[in-house]
Every structure is written in structure tokens, then in C-alpha cells.
Length: 179
Image (cartoon, rainbow, N blue to C red; front, side, top):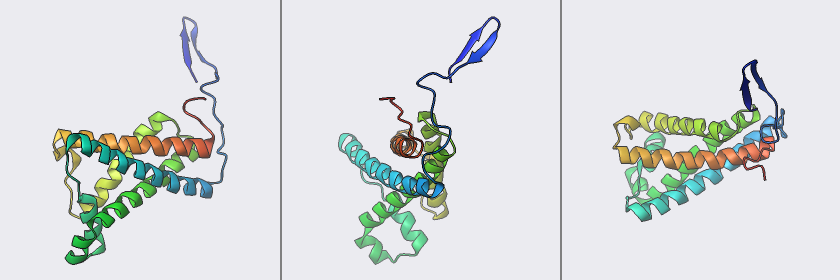
């Protein structure tokens, strides 16, 4: 709700843009299912945005996700060499689905909107870093070159915005654009 300040004090009243349903439209189980599918869709679009960005910047593919999954599953080097792209896609989509359930829970409990998706970007980055660092594959983001930080965080922000919009729309019935 908008907050208005006057000499006699502040007051708030709901307007058409700030009102949203006080209760979710779906059960928690359905919200988790929505989060899984929204996270998968967001991860697919994030991979697409990666390809567009790589076309523009000539940045090579990253195989950190594939190496992470291979290390965690104990995959043989020959399997890794043959199926690197498959392992990359499994890791991207699996982490996207997992993080989608977190965003669905946020939406279910009323943490909605673009700012919630901005916060979720940190959650998504944190989840990746926990898995990648535990597998001994990646370094902490603050040690990366600044250009890599910008690229990774912007792609994860895009993922979180797509996933967040879908979760808010299907779980709460909130359209960010009030159309």
C-alpha cells in the first residue's frame, strides 16, 4: 500500500495497484508443482538468454555445471567426455526446478513481486554456489572477474524474474503489470 506523509502523521490506504489476494489460490502442494514447472521454464529461458549473450560477446560455454554434477554423482571420465552437454542441461534444469520451489513458497506465503524475485536471485546464486563449491568445481563469486559476475548475476536475475512472475500469477493471481 502506498504510504502518505502529512504534517499530522502518515497514513496508508489500498489502491487498485497495491491490493492482492490475502490468501493463495492453490494448495501448498499445487504451489510446489507450479514452482517446479515455473523453475523449469525459467531455466530453459535462462539457457536461451545465455546463448544469445554468448553470440553477442563470443563467450565460450561454461562446463562448471556439468563438472559439478559429474563430481557429485561420481561419473567416470569417459561418460563425462561423451555427455558433457547432457550433464550441463540436467544441472541447469534441476537447479532451476529446485529454486523454483523456493520461489513458489515465497509466493504462497505472500512474498511477491519484482523485489521478491530480486531477493530470489540471491537465493538462486547461493544454491548454485553451495553445490558447485561442495563439489570442488567453482570458486566464490567475489573471486571471479567482474565481467563474469555481471553475466552470471544478470542471467540468474532473468531466471528469477520469469519464475517469480509465473509463481505470483498462478499461485496468488497477481499480475505484475495490472493488465
